[in-house]
Length: 378
Image (cartoon, rainbow, N blue to C red; front, side):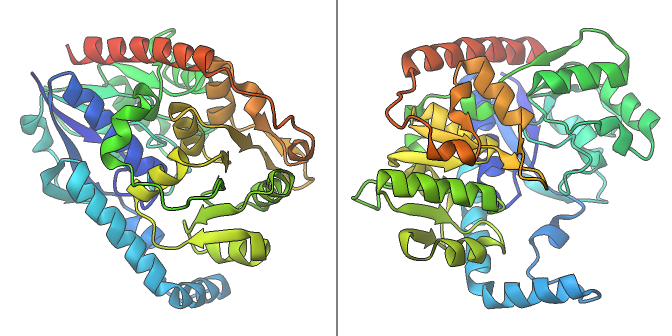
Protein backbone atom coordinates (compact mmCIF):
# COMPACT_ATOMS: atom_id res chain seq x y z
CA UNK A 1 0.00 0.00 0.00
CA UNK A 2 1.30 3.45 -0.94
CA UNK A 3 0.35 6.88 0.36
CA UNK A 4 -0.85 8.81 -2.68
CA UNK A 5 -1.89 12.41 -3.19
CA UNK A 6 -4.03 13.59 -6.10
CA UNK A 7 -3.54 17.11 -7.43
CA UNK A 8 -6.33 18.19 -9.76
CA UNK A 9 -9.18 20.66 -10.26
CA UNK A 10 -11.20 19.20 -7.39
CA UNK A 11 -12.13 22.63 -6.05
CA UNK A 12 -13.76 23.87 -9.24
CA UNK A 13 -17.48 24.53 -9.02
CA UNK A 14 -17.89 22.25 -12.00
CA UNK A 15 -19.57 18.85 -12.04
CA UNK A 16 -17.05 17.16 -14.33
CA UNK A 17 -14.03 18.39 -12.41
CA UNK A 18 -15.17 17.35 -8.95
CA UNK A 19 -16.53 14.00 -10.16
CA UNK A 20 -13.40 13.00 -12.09
CA UNK A 21 -11.45 13.67 -8.88
CA UNK A 22 -13.84 11.37 -7.01
CA UNK A 23 -13.46 8.71 -9.71
CA UNK A 24 -9.65 8.70 -9.59
CA UNK A 25 -9.65 8.65 -5.80
CA UNK A 26 -11.98 5.64 -5.79
CA UNK A 27 -9.87 3.87 -8.42
CA UNK A 28 -6.71 4.20 -6.35
CA UNK A 29 -8.48 3.16 -3.14
CA UNK A 30 -9.76 0.03 -4.90
CA UNK A 31 -6.13 -0.78 -5.69
CA UNK A 32 -5.47 -0.79 -1.94
CA UNK A 33 -3.72 2.56 -1.55
CA UNK A 34 -4.14 5.24 1.09
CA UNK A 35 -5.38 8.19 -0.96
CA UNK A 36 -5.99 11.89 -0.37
CA UNK A 37 -7.03 14.66 -2.71
CA UNK A 38 -4.61 17.49 -1.98
CA UNK A 39 -6.76 20.43 -0.91
CA UNK A 40 -5.19 23.08 -3.13
CA UNK A 41 -6.86 26.34 -4.17
CA UNK A 42 -5.36 27.67 -7.43
CA UNK A 43 -4.24 31.20 -8.23
CA UNK A 44 -7.39 32.42 -9.99
CA UNK A 45 -9.93 30.65 -7.82
CA UNK A 46 -11.46 33.72 -6.21
CA UNK A 47 -11.57 35.53 -9.55
CA UNK A 48 -13.35 32.59 -11.19
CA UNK A 49 -15.80 31.68 -8.45
CA UNK A 50 -16.16 34.85 -6.41
CA UNK A 51 -19.55 36.54 -6.61
CA UNK A 52 -18.19 39.97 -7.42
CA UNK A 53 -15.19 41.50 -9.19
CA UNK A 54 -13.60 44.92 -9.03
CA UNK A 55 -15.94 47.10 -11.15
CA UNK A 56 -13.25 48.60 -13.38
CA UNK A 57 -14.94 47.85 -16.71
CA UNK A 58 -18.43 47.78 -18.20
CA UNK A 59 -18.22 43.98 -18.49
CA UNK A 60 -17.44 43.63 -14.79
CA UNK A 61 -20.26 45.97 -13.80
CA UNK A 62 -22.64 43.79 -15.83
CA UNK A 63 -21.07 40.65 -14.33
CA UNK A 64 -21.60 41.96 -10.79
CA UNK A 65 -25.18 42.99 -11.56
CA UNK A 66 -26.10 39.56 -12.92
CA UNK A 67 -24.42 37.84 -9.97
CA UNK A 68 -26.25 40.08 -7.53
CA UNK A 69 -29.57 39.02 -9.05
CA UNK A 70 -28.60 35.34 -8.74
CA UNK A 71 -26.50 35.57 -5.57
CA UNK A 72 -28.64 33.15 -3.59
CA UNK A 73 -28.45 30.43 -6.25
CA UNK A 74 -24.71 30.84 -6.84
CA UNK A 75 -23.89 30.90 -3.13
CA UNK A 76 -25.96 27.80 -2.41
CA UNK A 77 -24.40 25.98 -5.36
CA UNK A 78 -20.90 26.63 -4.02
CA UNK A 79 -22.07 25.34 -0.64
CA UNK A 80 -23.39 22.10 -2.19
CA UNK A 81 -20.08 21.51 -3.94
CA UNK A 82 -18.14 22.19 -0.73
CA UNK A 83 -20.31 19.68 1.13
CA UNK A 84 -19.72 17.07 -1.58
CA UNK A 85 -15.95 17.57 -1.40
CA UNK A 86 -15.94 17.25 2.39
CA UNK A 87 -18.08 14.11 2.33
CA UNK A 88 -16.66 12.23 -0.65
CA UNK A 89 -13.18 13.37 -1.72
CA UNK A 90 -11.03 12.39 1.29
CA UNK A 91 -9.35 15.80 1.32
CA UNK A 92 -5.92 16.29 2.82
CA UNK A 93 -6.03 17.87 6.30
CA UNK A 94 -3.56 20.50 5.09
CA UNK A 95 -5.04 23.24 2.91
CA UNK A 96 -2.87 25.03 0.38
CA UNK A 97 -3.32 28.24 -1.57
CA UNK A 98 -1.31 29.65 -4.42
CA UNK A 99 1.86 31.15 -2.95
CA UNK A 100 2.01 28.74 0.02
CA UNK A 101 5.11 26.65 0.65
CA UNK A 102 4.21 23.21 -0.73
CA UNK A 103 7.59 21.53 -0.34
CA UNK A 104 6.21 19.50 2.58
CA UNK A 105 4.25 17.39 0.09
CA UNK A 106 7.47 15.59 -0.77
CA UNK A 107 7.63 14.07 2.72
CA UNK A 108 3.93 13.31 3.02
CA UNK A 109 3.35 11.02 0.02
CA UNK A 110 5.01 8.12 -1.79
CA UNK A 111 3.56 9.43 -5.05
CA UNK A 112 1.56 12.40 -6.30
CA UNK A 113 -0.70 11.96 -9.30
CA UNK A 114 -1.44 15.12 -11.25
CA UNK A 115 -4.68 14.87 -13.19
CA UNK A 116 -7.06 14.31 -14.71
CA UNK A 117 -8.77 17.35 -16.32
CA UNK A 118 -7.19 20.33 -18.07
CA UNK A 119 -4.58 21.03 -15.40
CA UNK A 120 -1.85 21.43 -18.06
CA UNK A 121 -3.89 23.64 -20.34
CA UNK A 122 -2.31 27.10 -19.98
CA UNK A 123 -5.51 28.66 -21.34
CA UNK A 124 -7.50 27.15 -18.48
CA UNK A 125 -8.08 29.81 -15.82
CA UNK A 126 -7.77 27.18 -13.06
CA UNK A 127 -4.28 26.16 -14.14
CA UNK A 128 -1.09 27.44 -12.53
CA UNK A 129 2.49 26.27 -12.05
CA UNK A 130 1.77 24.20 -8.93
CA UNK A 131 0.01 21.57 -11.03
CA UNK A 132 3.48 20.77 -12.43
CA UNK A 133 4.85 20.12 -8.89
CA UNK A 134 7.81 22.52 -8.82
CA UNK A 135 9.16 21.11 -5.54
CA UNK A 136 12.32 19.23 -4.53
CA UNK A 137 11.34 15.62 -4.04
CA UNK A 138 12.14 11.94 -3.76
CA UNK A 139 8.55 10.81 -4.34
CA UNK A 140 7.12 9.62 -7.65
CA UNK A 141 5.56 12.27 -9.86
CA UNK A 142 2.91 10.84 -12.19
CA UNK A 143 0.52 12.49 -14.60
CA UNK A 144 -2.79 10.80 -15.28
CA UNK A 145 -5.05 11.66 -18.24
CA UNK A 146 -4.16 15.34 -18.33
CA UNK A 147 -5.74 17.32 -21.16
CA UNK A 148 -3.99 20.02 -23.20
CA UNK A 149 -5.16 22.68 -25.62
CA UNK A 150 -4.00 23.06 -29.23
CA UNK A 151 -0.58 24.70 -29.39
CA UNK A 152 -0.29 24.61 -25.62
CA UNK A 153 3.48 25.10 -25.60
CA UNK A 154 3.10 28.51 -27.28
CA UNK A 155 1.22 29.76 -24.22
CA UNK A 156 4.12 29.39 -21.79
CA UNK A 157 6.02 32.54 -20.91
CA UNK A 158 9.00 30.36 -20.01
CA UNK A 159 8.79 27.15 -22.14
CA UNK A 160 12.11 25.82 -20.87
CA UNK A 161 10.92 25.96 -17.26
CA UNK A 162 7.80 23.95 -18.05
CA UNK A 163 9.75 21.52 -20.19
CA UNK A 164 12.04 20.89 -17.22
CA UNK A 165 9.14 20.45 -14.81
CA UNK A 166 7.26 18.01 -17.07
CA UNK A 167 10.46 16.08 -17.84
CA UNK A 168 10.89 15.59 -14.09
CA UNK A 169 7.79 13.36 -13.99
CA UNK A 170 8.45 9.64 -13.65
CA UNK A 171 5.50 8.69 -15.85
CA UNK A 172 3.39 10.74 -18.25
CA UNK A 173 -0.10 10.07 -19.56
CA UNK A 174 -2.71 12.20 -21.30
CA UNK A 175 -6.36 11.90 -22.26
CA UNK A 176 -6.21 12.43 -26.05
CA UNK A 177 -3.98 11.20 -28.87
CA UNK A 178 -3.48 14.79 -29.99
CA UNK A 179 -2.23 15.68 -26.50
CA UNK A 180 0.28 12.82 -26.67
CA UNK A 181 1.63 14.14 -29.95
CA UNK A 182 1.86 17.70 -28.63
CA UNK A 183 3.57 16.72 -25.41
CA UNK A 184 6.11 14.46 -27.09
CA UNK A 185 6.94 17.17 -29.61
CA UNK A 186 7.32 19.72 -26.80
CA UNK A 187 9.60 17.48 -24.77
CA UNK A 188 11.45 16.00 -27.75
CA UNK A 189 11.35 12.61 -26.04
CA UNK A 190 9.88 10.34 -28.69
CA UNK A 191 7.22 7.79 -27.75
CA UNK A 192 7.11 8.15 -23.94
CA UNK A 193 3.61 9.48 -23.30
CA UNK A 194 0.67 7.12 -22.80
CA UNK A 195 -2.95 7.77 -23.74
CA UNK A 196 -5.36 6.63 -21.01
CA UNK A 197 -9.03 6.97 -20.16
CA UNK A 198 -10.40 9.79 -18.09
CA UNK A 199 -11.01 8.51 -14.52
CA UNK A 200 -14.78 8.84 -14.97
CA UNK A 201 -14.66 6.09 -17.62
CA UNK A 202 -12.81 3.59 -15.41
CA UNK A 203 -15.94 2.68 -13.43
CA UNK A 204 -19.24 0.94 -13.95
CA UNK A 205 -22.55 2.69 -13.30
CA UNK A 206 -23.05 0.64 -10.12
CA UNK A 207 -19.86 2.17 -8.72
CA UNK A 208 -21.57 5.57 -8.68
CA UNK A 209 -24.71 4.42 -6.86
CA UNK A 210 -23.24 5.59 -3.55
CA UNK A 211 -23.29 9.21 -4.74
CA UNK A 212 -26.29 9.10 -7.08
CA UNK A 213 -29.47 10.91 -5.97
CA UNK A 214 -32.81 9.12 -6.47
CA UNK A 215 -35.10 9.94 -9.36
CA UNK A 216 -36.89 13.27 -8.90
CA UNK A 217 -38.97 13.45 -12.10
CA UNK A 218 -41.41 10.67 -13.02
CA UNK A 219 -42.09 11.61 -16.64
CA UNK A 220 -39.59 10.92 -19.44
CA UNK A 221 -37.25 13.89 -19.98
CA UNK A 222 -34.21 15.16 -21.82
CA UNK A 223 -31.31 16.15 -19.59
CA UNK A 224 -29.37 19.07 -21.08
CA UNK A 225 -25.87 19.57 -19.72
CA UNK A 226 -24.04 22.56 -21.17
CA UNK A 227 -21.44 24.19 -18.95
CA UNK A 228 -21.48 27.60 -20.65
CA UNK A 229 -24.99 27.44 -22.11
CA UNK A 230 -23.89 27.53 -25.71
CA UNK A 231 -26.70 28.68 -28.08
CA UNK A 232 -25.83 25.94 -30.58
CA UNK A 233 -26.44 23.29 -27.93
CA UNK A 234 -29.59 25.03 -26.74
CA UNK A 235 -31.08 25.00 -30.24
CA UNK A 236 -30.16 21.35 -30.75
CA UNK A 237 -31.85 20.46 -27.45
CA UNK A 238 -34.93 22.42 -28.47
CA UNK A 239 -35.10 20.55 -31.77
CA UNK A 240 -34.73 17.17 -30.07
CA UNK A 241 -37.35 18.13 -27.50
CA UNK A 242 -39.83 19.01 -30.22
CA UNK A 243 -39.09 15.77 -32.08
CA UNK A 244 -39.46 13.56 -28.99
CA UNK A 245 -42.16 15.58 -27.22
CA UNK A 246 -40.11 15.46 -24.02
CA UNK A 247 -39.39 18.38 -21.69
CA UNK A 248 -35.83 19.51 -21.05
CA UNK A 249 -34.24 19.75 -17.62
CA UNK A 250 -30.96 21.61 -17.17
CA UNK A 251 -28.73 22.88 -14.37
CA UNK A 252 -27.57 26.31 -13.36
CA UNK A 253 -23.81 26.15 -14.02
CA UNK A 254 -22.74 29.80 -14.35
CA UNK A 255 -24.12 33.31 -14.74
CA UNK A 256 -25.17 32.56 -18.31
CA UNK A 257 -27.70 30.03 -17.05
CA UNK A 258 -30.46 32.61 -16.93
CA UNK A 259 -30.11 32.98 -20.72
CA UNK A 260 -31.09 29.35 -21.18
CA UNK A 261 -34.20 29.80 -19.06
CA UNK A 262 -35.16 32.85 -21.12
CA UNK A 263 -34.40 31.04 -24.37
CA UNK A 264 -36.35 27.86 -23.70
CA UNK A 265 -39.30 29.44 -21.94
CA UNK A 266 -42.18 26.96 -21.58
CA UNK A 267 -40.66 23.58 -22.31
CA UNK A 268 -37.50 23.75 -20.22
CA UNK A 269 -37.18 23.40 -16.46
CA UNK A 270 -34.12 24.87 -14.73
CA UNK A 271 -32.66 23.22 -11.64
CA UNK A 272 -31.03 25.95 -9.61
CA UNK A 273 -29.69 24.22 -6.51
CA UNK A 274 -28.17 21.00 -7.77
CA UNK A 275 -25.38 19.06 -6.07
CA UNK A 276 -23.03 16.65 -7.87
CA UNK A 277 -25.16 13.78 -6.56
CA UNK A 278 -28.25 15.33 -8.20
CA UNK A 279 -26.27 15.73 -11.43
CA UNK A 280 -25.70 11.97 -11.45
CA UNK A 281 -29.36 11.36 -10.71
CA UNK A 282 -30.47 13.45 -13.69
CA UNK A 283 -28.12 11.58 -16.05
CA UNK A 284 -28.99 8.13 -14.70
CA UNK A 285 -32.74 8.64 -15.07
CA UNK A 286 -32.85 10.65 -18.30
CA UNK A 287 -34.52 9.25 -21.41
CA UNK A 288 -32.01 11.23 -23.50
CA UNK A 289 -28.93 13.27 -22.62
CA UNK A 290 -27.93 16.26 -24.75
CA UNK A 291 -24.53 17.77 -23.94
CA UNK A 292 -21.53 19.66 -25.27
CA UNK A 293 -19.39 18.65 -22.30
CA UNK A 294 -16.67 16.00 -22.21
CA UNK A 295 -17.79 14.72 -18.83
CA UNK A 296 -21.45 14.92 -19.81
CA UNK A 297 -20.51 12.59 -22.65
CA UNK A 298 -18.36 10.35 -20.44
CA UNK A 299 -21.00 9.78 -17.79
CA UNK A 300 -23.64 9.15 -20.46
CA UNK A 301 -21.40 6.35 -21.72
CA UNK A 302 -20.89 4.90 -18.25
CA UNK A 303 -24.62 4.93 -17.50
CA UNK A 304 -25.26 3.55 -21.01
CA UNK A 305 -27.79 6.27 -21.82
CA UNK A 306 -29.13 7.38 -25.18
CA UNK A 307 -27.27 10.65 -25.79
CA UNK A 308 -26.12 13.17 -28.33
CA UNK A 309 -22.99 15.25 -27.92
CA UNK A 310 -23.38 18.53 -29.79
CA UNK A 311 -20.59 20.16 -31.77
CA UNK A 312 -20.16 23.84 -31.04
CA UNK A 313 -20.01 26.27 -33.95
CA UNK A 314 -17.56 28.92 -35.13
CA UNK A 315 -18.45 32.52 -36.01
CA UNK A 316 -19.75 31.38 -39.40
CA UNK A 317 -21.96 28.71 -37.89
CA UNK A 318 -19.72 25.85 -39.02
CA UNK A 319 -19.48 22.87 -36.61
CA UNK A 320 -16.27 22.59 -34.57
CA UNK A 321 -15.01 19.17 -33.53
CA UNK A 322 -13.88 19.11 -29.91
CA UNK A 323 -10.96 16.67 -29.87
CA UNK A 324 -11.64 15.69 -26.27
CA UNK A 325 -15.13 14.46 -27.14
CA UNK A 326 -14.50 13.33 -30.71
CA UNK A 327 -11.38 11.29 -29.92
CA UNK A 328 -13.06 9.51 -27.01
CA UNK A 329 -16.19 8.60 -28.99
CA UNK A 330 -14.11 7.43 -31.93
CA UNK A 331 -12.07 5.12 -29.69
CA UNK A 332 -15.26 3.61 -28.29
CA UNK A 333 -17.04 3.23 -31.61
CA UNK A 334 -19.75 5.78 -30.79
CA UNK A 335 -18.74 8.69 -33.01
CA UNK A 336 -22.18 8.71 -34.67
CA UNK A 337 -23.53 10.27 -31.45
CA UNK A 338 -21.41 13.40 -32.04
CA UNK A 339 -23.62 15.63 -34.15
CA UNK A 340 -24.07 19.23 -35.26
CA UNK A 341 -27.02 21.46 -34.45
CA UNK A 342 -28.31 20.95 -37.98
CA UNK A 343 -28.12 17.16 -37.70
CA UNK A 344 -30.37 17.24 -34.63
CA UNK A 345 -33.28 17.82 -37.01
CA UNK A 346 -32.63 14.70 -39.08
CA UNK A 347 -30.69 12.23 -36.94
CA UNK A 348 -32.37 8.84 -36.57
CA UNK A 349 -33.86 8.85 -33.08
CA UNK A 350 -34.62 5.13 -33.28
CA UNK A 351 -30.99 4.18 -33.85
CA UNK A 352 -29.72 2.42 -30.72
CA UNK A 353 -26.24 2.61 -29.29
CA UNK A 354 -24.61 -0.83 -29.31
CA UNK A 355 -23.61 -0.67 -25.66
CA UNK A 356 -22.53 -4.31 -25.64
CA UNK A 357 -19.73 -3.30 -28.01
CA UNK A 358 -19.13 0.24 -26.68
CA UNK A 359 -18.91 -0.82 -23.03
CA UNK A 360 -16.73 -3.82 -23.91
CA UNK A 361 -14.27 -1.47 -25.63
CA UNK A 362 -14.41 0.95 -22.71
CA UNK A 363 -13.62 -1.86 -20.27
CA UNK A 364 -10.73 -3.00 -22.44
CA UNK A 365 -9.26 0.52 -22.47
CA UNK A 366 -9.97 0.87 -18.74
CA UNK A 367 -7.95 -2.29 -18.09
CA UNK A 368 -5.00 -0.83 -19.99
CA UNK A 369 -5.32 2.44 -18.06
CA UNK A 370 -5.37 0.62 -14.73
CA UNK A 371 -2.27 -1.30 -15.74
CA UNK A 372 -0.56 2.02 -16.48
CA UNK A 373 -1.45 3.27 -12.99
CA UNK A 374 -0.18 0.09 -11.32
CA UNK A 375 3.11 0.24 -13.21
CA UNK A 376 3.54 3.95 -12.58
CA UNK A 377 2.93 3.69 -8.83
CA UNK A 378 5.06 0.55 -8.54
